[in-house]
Image 1 (cartoon, rainbow, N blue to C red):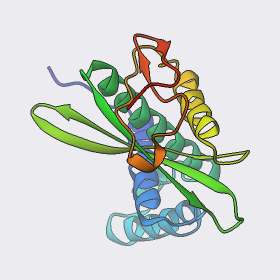
Image 2: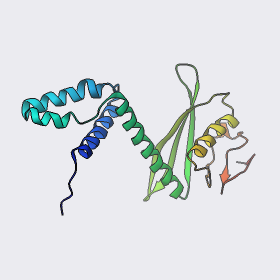
Image 3: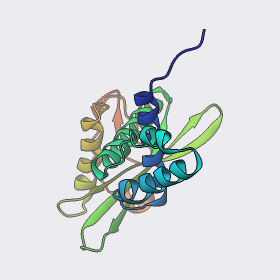
Image 4: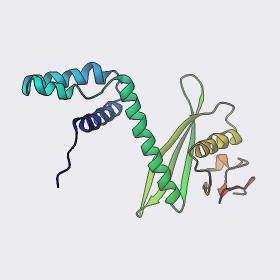
Length: 183
């Protein structure tokens, strides 16, 4: 039995694919409507005829739509990653601090875990540190990320590098904090 796909479903899928291309190329979201859609319509008009142009015109590529599609895909990727972390027996969290061009401290979190006998490494988040970059503040930003994701139970942080071993709270097991954990 053949399943029928409506034009709106095809247009929606095309919209997501183009949004993904725009994001990968790091282009402004407006390029979807101002250049890509216009170019596609012109190519289709010249090669296939004016009737097919109407179908291409159904693909929504406004800047707001592209932004929303990119956000949807990003949320889906993050949700999938969080599920993998929860199903992993253990994971390692590497946090690096940097300063942006506005002289604001940023935390970048990279996570590593074993999946199907391979060590996987993924970007987890980049968050601004609103206060000073103390161990407690870095922990709070990281902890808030997991709480926002509703994933603050059973998180095991592995030992941090030597320069961070003076952090007062950096360890969870079965949803309980262990302050002043000796490394």
